[in-house]
Length: 363
Image (tube, rainbow, N blue to C red; front, side):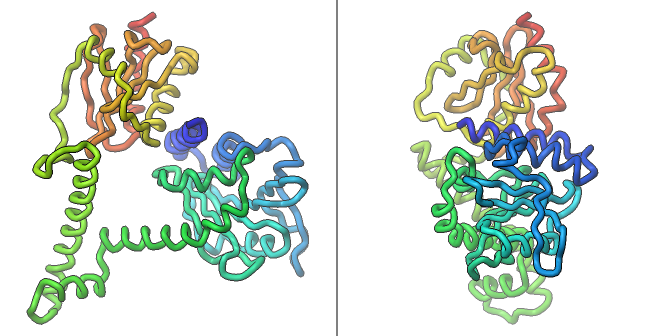
């Protein structure tokens, strides 16, 4: 959980500060050094662990520098090349990584702009960096399935053999997921034609192509929704005629007693990455007025509570993220809750003053 919280905190920082980061140096200081130190756990001020501006002569290239080299037992294990956060990552940015990868003992190379981290190894040819990453971490939308693999690169749990053995599957599964996602969002002609032939017996004319492109995209979205519904119904033990993904009405009000009773029930609780990330945002908002350690998370079955001093009688906010429509629950002076629909976690910052007012009610 500590690793997830640190990753969530950095993710929140990236989303709130990326608009003011304009240079590569600022990207390193604000995002990448905290990733190396807080998330991966390496001491960025210890040259035996992290070497900034690492230099190695490669062929006819003399004096070229790589932004960071992470060492273990005197051996380079991870190379990191940085680009500024406002720029999109492209394989052309990795030319120095390709050269350094072949000239060192490193098996892991990272290309990053502080928001997206692309992890490479040498699956295709020994000691030669692959052209495609085996893992892509996007701090704007973290894929929770990647967290265990990322944790294998931390100082505390470094396991290179396990990383390499899992890299091939991660590489192709990740690429397939992105390809399927792209097809669902914007179906290609071949995909549209293939599916149309399954359901339409007429000629595949241009008019039919355009008609079924829209129908394919719509059917894909509905298919995904149905799959999620089925999984939720199974998990909740509900009958098949329940519309799980229908958003509930808002606003709603819950009494203080109901809050306490619900928080005391801890069976079947699963804390998600988004809940942890939302908690970090609320804590960041309130830390100007109160010590961060006093803002405490308390997860429950249907919502994630944020309370003051680990006291159920001092609710600060609730995160209702276990549904399609997310809600941020805020409390008035009588501790009645009002739910506010939000689309992105960044919208929590829009309620900063309300959160601070709730905090002042407990002063």
